Amino acid sequence: MTRMPSATGTFDPRHSGLEAFRSADPAMRRCLDLARIAASTDLPVLILGESGTGKTLLARAIHNSSKRGGHPFVSFNAAALSDTLLDSQLFGHEKGAFTGADKSVKGKFELSEDGTLFIDEIADLSLAAQAKILRAVEYGEYERLGGEKLRTADVRLISATHLALATYIRSDQFRKDLFYRISGITLTIPPLRERPEDLRALIAVEIAQASRQQGKSIVGLSTQAAEILFSYEWPGNLRELKRVIQLAVAIAESDIIPAEAILFQPLEGTRGVQRTGDVGRATPDEDLKLRSIEQRHIRGVLQKYGGNKRQAAHALGISRSTLDRKLSV
Image (tube, rainbow, N blue to C red):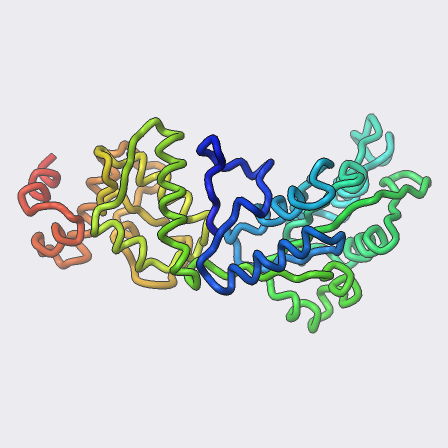
């Protein structure tokens, strides 16, 4: 999805609703149409999509556009939590419930009263935790850890996962009854590689935002930089796009982002053509000065083209003499 700047020229996910989103991609437009329907109802919402596609962003926008928008939006990531810790986080605990519990604490359900609870990575919940979530969602009832009082909360639930829930259900790792309860409306966010129509606008928005944050006046991309960005498949989706553009703006020394400023993290995926930024990376112990990063990048590109300086210079968007000068520094 494309985030449109507000009247102040910035995008604030804490307060922006669905009106702030646009897309030229048919699948993304269908997702946004369903999101608007979800915002007009109180049905539980399940958001599916790869990591980095903007599931939290969409969940908050649905909340902001709904009748609950003036009430709390509470986000909770269910990944890698023990059942005890999850109980305490979701439902709260009473004083003395466990070692170190020196006071009573409200849980996420209680903090979400009259608002929205967003549970990210819901597929990571244990079966025991799933049963407690089902009770809370179905009846609005829960108990604090270490407590005996039955409490109630009026909460709208939005859940999300990047995992294939159907596979988890078939292998009995996810409760079918919970799936039906949380999926009143199911939204699927397509990955960025399937939305080429949106990529140009998304890049423009990220460049504008990064330029503003860094006090720069970047006006565009070189031809080679644009070719790299538009041919890459973005396995890390919007999260990766944001990081790549922020770094590119930081490296750029003029108002145009050059090809050598486009650097990718090799661990973010292997889909698509390996780009020039995939080579010559620094390890955590290496020099991270911009000049050193540039040197490693240039030498990596040169290695990729078998030492052919003409081809390497062309790929980098610089002249052969500039390449020689940078290599001699």
